[in-house]
Length: 548
Ligand code: GLC
Image 1: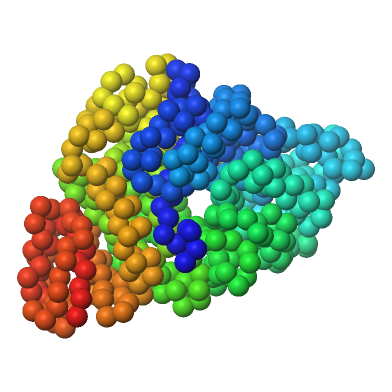
Image 2 (image 1 turned 180 degrees about the vertical axis):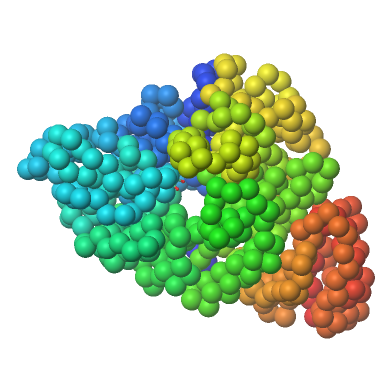
């Protein structure tokens, strides 16, 4: 077993985690302050979103210096302290590396834009004429650079210029900066949109936005193998790739050990179940059957191909899961626990995003002035240009905006949810007075204690790490039921995704008097399973260990 196969990783969005200095934004010393809490929770590793120098146009995903800490987060000494204090508690730190693109304020781009024959010109991707590719944040993926009369490619904001990975000097610089951080003692890397780094030389276009040409592009596996040789080989690192619009086949290749590329991959297919016809910016309910189907396909496919999944519901780009697939009102606590259980018993490495362990909800921002995210603001502009009504645009934004997941961590019921003594950079949901760490630490029935129990179970229960996944009742319209099996034992995981109670019938051979049952976890005080027919209560979920 590899380290990450029994680990749980916690994601920190430092801007919104904790401000040691009492500023509008969080900082690295704020993370140091909260390490005891993270150790208590039981996580093995922290993925911290980018805190390197950046103009912060995309909250740090626009890096202007890979060797410096952004002053808003602190100093290099703070970072060294964080690494060593985390290590003392047995916690590794995973650095978020953004190398599909740099900020246009990066020295390389400043050089590149200055003349056609500058040695850095070929660090980026230039064309005399744009093709029809679109930016993932809306609009054309090409920006005109007047000084040299050419367009540069930016798959994200126009201030995030794509690096030219076909240039060996670019790869050498990337591997060098990764070695710098590895040698400082980080325990691994989270590689931002890493499956977009290889673009086809002829920049083809057709009726699509271009993504099919540059997603999992022509040389991506070769470049990741090179990264493995140059940076990872011989070091105990956990490396996860963020894979945008990817495929199962490619994720198997990226993450199976024989490929010598990455430890595991994130994909987003299960989070597009509320994108009707793949359109994100439309308000819509989620498709439950599709959600189950996608998870099952990936569980079975990765299992068969020897790949490894990164499992997650939430991150800094996604709305809060309890508001999305659960119920953030009356059934908030049970539904947050159910969603956690459904995910944490799958094959892969679970990620917990700050505040998810409390059942934090979307903030419900109603006016555009409350939003900060560059993507959200770009989209509203495009919707206005297209003549969409303000009411319909805002309904979509309220449901889908990335700011839903970016409000400050709720530490206590005091001013600013205990996040900072200063005025936070973004608003705080009114329910922070009830939903916070302090109140849940004292409550053994809280969402927080449920997450802590799940994290501990993964470490100690081999079937969670290695058991073979098998779906039950695939056509059931409100229950996701599955097994994890091995060595004559199995875990039975039952999850009701809705408020309506419902009866299900399990295969008779699973539940018989000859079979020993042990309840591992549940979200109601008692477990109702006595026979193969069972009525699940609102959002009920439980896991039984069954032994022949
Ligand atoms: C990833 C990040 C996201 C960022 C984008 C561009 O998807 O998670 O926050 O905006 O890459 O770097």
